[in-house]
Length: 169
Image (cartoon, rainbow, N blue to C red; front, side, top):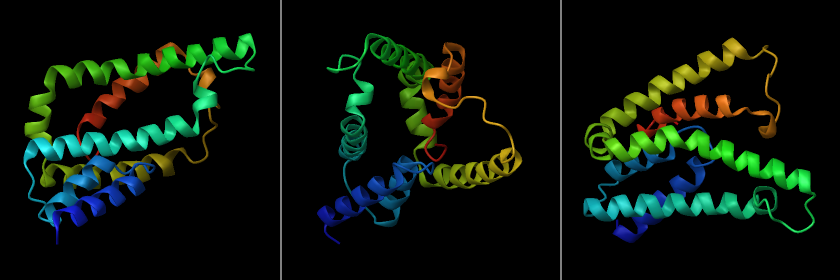
C-alpha cells in the first residue's frame, strides 16, 4: 500500500479515536505497526503531533464562543467565569506538562511501542468497565466545568500524567 494511503488510514483512525476514551495515540501506534508504515521516526512523531493538532483545533473552532473569554456579547460575570475555567485548565495541564518535558525521551523509549500500547489498552479498558459498573448509581458531585475547584483541576492533572503512556487515555 502506498505510504500516502497508509497516512490517510492512520488519519481516519485518529479522527475516530480522538473523540473516544480509547487512546488515539495508542491506536495510531498499533496501526503504524500493522500497516508496516516505514517512515523515518522524526516524520512519524511530527505526523502524530500535526494530526492530533487538527483534532484539537476542531474542538477550539466548535467551542470558540464558549472558550474565548473576550467574546462580544458576553456579560462580565460570564467573561470572569470563562477566565477562571482557563486557569483551571492550565492547572490541570501543569503536572503532565512538567513530567512530559522532563522525561520525554524516557517516555518515548519505554512506552511508545506496540507491546506497551496493547497491554495498556487492555488493562485500562478493563479498569474503565470496572469503574463504570462500580459507580453507575453514584450521584454526580460536579455537574459542570465552572464548579470544578482548582484543587480538583490539579488532581485531574495528576491523573493526566498517566496519559503520557500511550494506551491509557
